[in-house]
Length: 114
Length: 109
Image 1: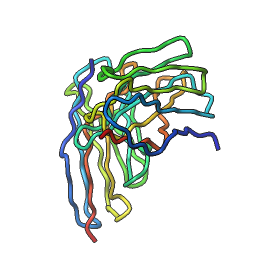
Image 2: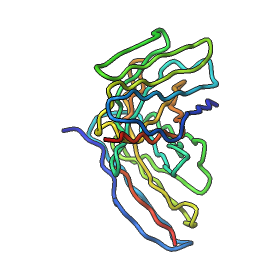
Image 3: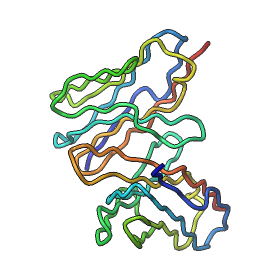
Image 4: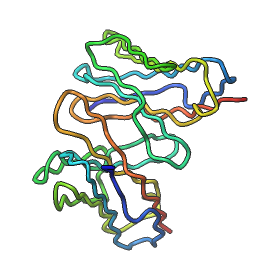
């Protein structure tokens, strides 16, 4: 089945370390997103990309950067991790066509910054 | 940008009763309103959606209503079952999705 995958699934790191979270998809979708989930705050958009040459900041991009290496791959980096970046991170994809924007989520990466 | 507010944050219902979750949005350009369900330890998944040219949509025990004038939309779950226990997110789409903070629904047996 076409799917969205994330690596790693869990990561514990220390303050100041550089971390990369990776997302791959076999759905053939053009649009990819990175979200952060915190209890009581829902899903907040970090970055999104509508195609390989398009990168856009979301509502909470400070402290994060992304790379769209190919249509199927979208990576999120924390250049210098800090404890308040401890959260559950989701990658998602959606198709370009139509007026729906149904998003398909990966399984999530649980990141702990000590 | 779009701002979506969702209420209540937690909801406990007796099995067989109905559950209602309400959301408001701020951007009149938003044209698509999905609802996602996230079971414990799982990824969010779409359960139902509605477009701005439709007032109501139903799928078995789940229904959504949309009032564009008032900028609010609601999710209704009837005859709740234990498997309905989850976190539910509403969202509004202009060119990207903005999510509400989520509602934790607990169905008591």
